[in-house]
Image: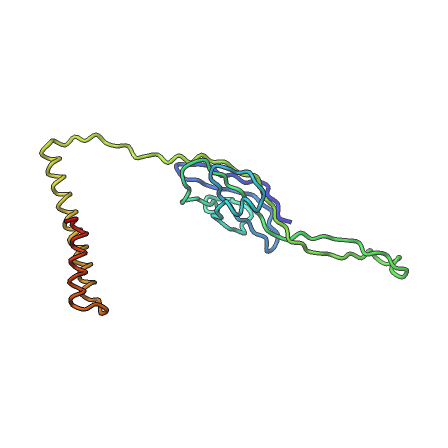
Length: 193
């Protein structure tokens, strides 16, 4: 049966890295679930509320290349929980018959599906906001930048409007009168007039 020996998620240089050491027999694998804010619950709750962020058959993270990095981790208190899927082998001694009493012991084996849930690893992911630099521009420079920004925004809006008008004109389902009406509506809504 699969076994979790070690599992850890840690914040390192702004990234959440996850490492593990497992026993994974043939055809066994591990899923890593991420839960936000709460780690309690049974397996069904974890798999329904959590997000499976990684699935692997690798038994150990021996190098940085084996580590899993959670690039999409949201901000907050996060819990990472390993869930292992595999088979367990159950051996039973067969009952002795009269003729098999002196023969070797006979076994019957049965493979059962098993799911093993490891302990959660907690990480507090605080995304640092970039530092705002002080504005050292003069008043004229600020006004010039505002004017340039508004001109660029207007040009982008005009280009977008031209593209939308071209789509209306190219529409085969509309008559010329309907196209003119659609263009007039578009221009009215876009300019707010």
